[in-house]
Image (tube, rainbow, N blue to C red; front, side):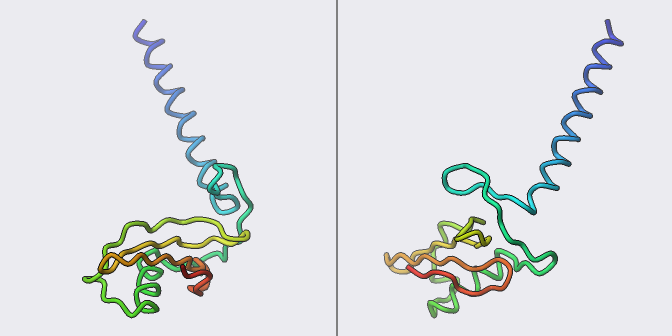
Amino acid sequence: MKKIFLKSIVLISLLLEITVYSANINYNDFILNQNNTAEKVRFSAGKNISSEKAKQIALSHARVAERDAKITKIQLGVEKGVAVYEIEFYVNGKKFEYDINSNSGEIVKVK
């Protein structure tokens, strides 16, 4: 009985490891869009900016110091097949929304 239980645990662990490994491989090709469906995305290997850098780009463009902003969203998303950081923050009750290209750091959209 103990052997069966142990074999089951090992098998489940292997399956989970394979699933996680497969998910990591596919992440570079697809990302879930707002409708929770996979969408093909263009990534530049090794040239992606960090979410911290994207946040700094948005704050700098808005001419706002980080200490004055309340950051409410930093999320990797998709805009026209390109991976973008969606950044949302408030300053004195005013809402700012930015989409920053995750490959180049270019501002794609400002609201």
